[in-house]
Length: 389
Image (tube, rainbow, N blue to C red; front, side, top):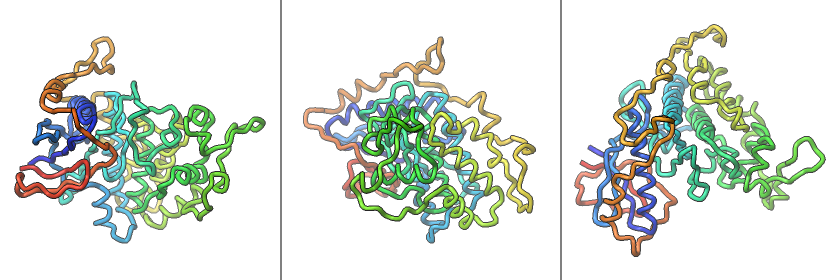
């Protein structure tokens, strides 16, 4: 059984499909199991729709959290640890091929089989992914409440933005609610400043949207100060968190007596550094003591200096397992991926672009099983996922 993503017949669908298929072909350089990314099978046409075929996975992480924690208290910390480690591993492997996911969130993480323990997860939905060496600001796609300050401000970006999104995701795993539950960009940035501090000047100076949210100063140590709600033109409302201690307090309540909670808090704080240059990297995160905590209860906190780093992901860092590549890798610079244009002619020949239209703004991330492939369910979104026998 397969999962199929349907890209509806719309304007620019050919170019969008080419981009995503090219990204997915580069993912084939990685082993989908050890790298924790979804396996891409192929693409085909259904009438005038372009269909992308993937391995069939069970349920997205957001749905799983809702099912396992209906009172929004989060998952047990050992489960949070196991899931987070797999996702950090995925980021490490993506970095080896120069790829940025751009939209990491619980809805874009799929559980392979919720009935098998420990849970195995995979990162999905690479439609908005970008190459770290060539980020296209005109086609950026992201979810604001999971996005880093540099993304929200449209400043200089690199793969560190994925680590921020993973930090916000890990918080939701542990607590059951969002760290920045706001739809307005100003409210998210203002909350970031209150909880984690103001982004450094080198981020603000390069931000295309900085002046919308910050006032420029000329005689202070910091060149920028965030606008008040009144200056921004919205009514002031009470924030969920006013400082990082509030976040710590929430975690302490939801994960009371959990072994390694202090280490988890330290990892989250390092993932959510407002300066992307100071944010923890995947390699550093995989060596964090949080991933080596023993599950048995202990009355003494583990010492950071005495924990032996033996997790499986660190052992694989030097030689990530690869499957036979379908992309051409430069012999002079292995990190430089040469475009693989195979399949583009098929896309161009198999699809008429004259009156196509596509609003590439939404994804349906839940896989729906269809008993009869010919009796497709009624679709109201531009993109559909459904099971394919």
